[in-house]
Length: 303
Length: 216
Image 1: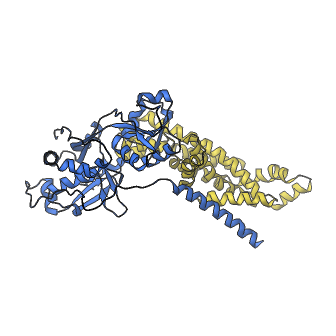
Image 2: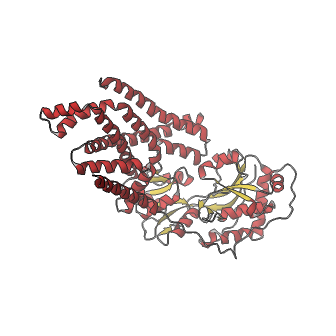
Image 3: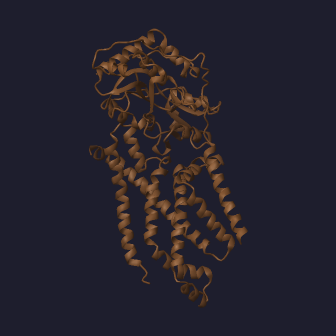
């Protein structure tokens, strides 16, 4: 009797373990190597001076800045296993901090997923947000945007051998199931091209990539730069359709109405574009995967 | 509270989807749970083993893991289907373990004399269970069964994260991130939505309990 109960318990344990292992087995991480030697380093201004009372003067004096970014966005904002931050957003933030005289190691990084960005800025928990943050009117009612520092566009990612899906207009015809992140702008935009029943939503894009791999969905859609990171991680299993169908200007989110800080960031971005820092920051990060180097987009006026 | 009135159709859709998930999972969980409870008290050892393993696996595995397995494990094994089915099934399997235990406690509460009397008049195991024991058992476990079902309604918010679009909780997430609405009023709407489902459910269960209670 005792031994039979033990066998039963063992069987249950084995089944549970199997379940857990299968659940954890999916998903892969593959980071761009950071050799350290040729790593891009944003220049740090020595003893910069700012008009008293401005955000710049305050940050420069305290010598630290709190920056919100994403921790799970390869090529743009990614926290490595060793805790170091890397990506184009991260470098842009480092350039801005550097102009304030704050070196890279004095930046406090705060994880700001899409849904919490406005709230974090309003509550003053971050000084600025650089997190693949598309400028739009709705958001601009709650925060101010400097920039844009990059113009992304929504695109589709499909399996490498897929020839049926050639752009957003081919989706309905193919009856394709499309995956995106819940609450993201791309998930709203794609509704113009597919039936609502064919839209699959997850909290993060890595789950979409898993669903694409197993054939549960036919395409993943979001900004091309995010897809680029996923394509890079897929080991040749996925490709980009390369037909961007929206314009996603990425801005730096700051406290609503802080015009001086906004103008300072815009000036810093223009300088970075002129002296080549902008290009170097790109090449050190997303440029390792992307074919073309972007130009700094035309900046918005601060208000 | 403008957010709620402005987006009322969205909220109502979310409510409908959540109700749909809960209805299907709830029914399936009740059926599966009852079958498993019957297995657990059956005189046949293999059936008892199935019932025990079922309960131990699904009760001790976090719902998140069960849903993860449904949404990402099954396609890996070559089983593809809609995420609505995966999510609803996962929620039902998980809940069925708790339903089973609730019903089994009810079966234990039925005086043994009832089952003995059933046997004495010549009823088999299946007959005495379905005609004599289960009806009394279920009636005495309405309150715990109600708690299990209300927990399931709340758990359906997690199922929404596994590919099922448009449930109440996802609607809230959508409003806060895509449309940049402030979290507090949006979430208030979500809370109201769940209360609209759970409070009447609780009241109904209370009425049901008074109607069918077994006096012992």
